[in-house]
Image 1 (cartoon, rainbow, N blue to C red):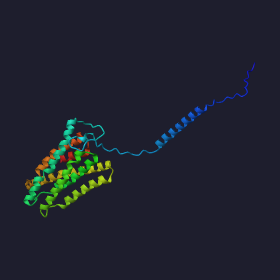
Image 2 (cartoon, helix red, strand yellow):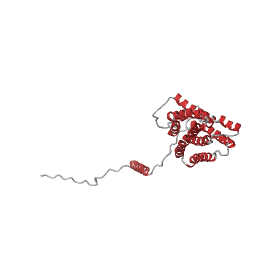
Image 3 (tube, helix red, strand yellow):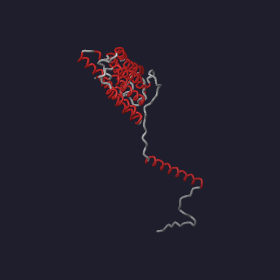
Image 4 (cartoon, rainbow, N blue to C red):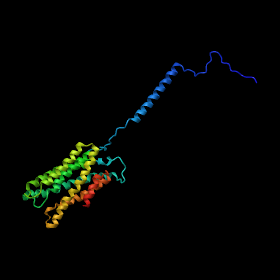
Length: 274
């Protein structure tokens, strides 16, 4: 059997063909870029991401006539309303709220004319200051002018009512405990807004408001019990109670249908049920 032998020719070699100088530089640059990209991706994956705080949008002009609060929430609501309804629910509650704050004015003027507050209590007026401060702070934190702006009136008139009550109250009428409690709540809300991050402060102040707002309804209820026991209607501010009831219903609609904020509609539901 004849054997075939492959003889190696002189100078021949079985090796990879070498690239020319331009091609070699191109291959080296591509390899370097690929290695750098892989190292950058690995570094990004290994580096912990910094938590970002998404704040509510403050779109819209700070006015009660443009319904800027409708787009504050970014998630889809389970109940949607048309722009006309949203506009009405944005304007009507703050306007009615002014009626709530002005309604005690005849009674307070009566204190000055009579020179005494009689059997009335300072609790509704002190709570008006505390409640107004809390919701003014909350409205600023969430960027909702519908909540913030009308409560400026609450703070101003509440202080006036409390001062007038103090001037004409009987010597044995309880005053200091209500004022101290209201001042403490107001200071707590403002201090929380200054000390915490915006989102955490909004949640905390909202919880404070959930406790203060039902307490504001407790003032007329306590006066109503006193009316029943003494058969004297002078202790209950009737206009204040009526305005509070109607205003509460509109705020429930605003909180549910416009901004879907439980801190708005929740305490109003509790107050209406009380």
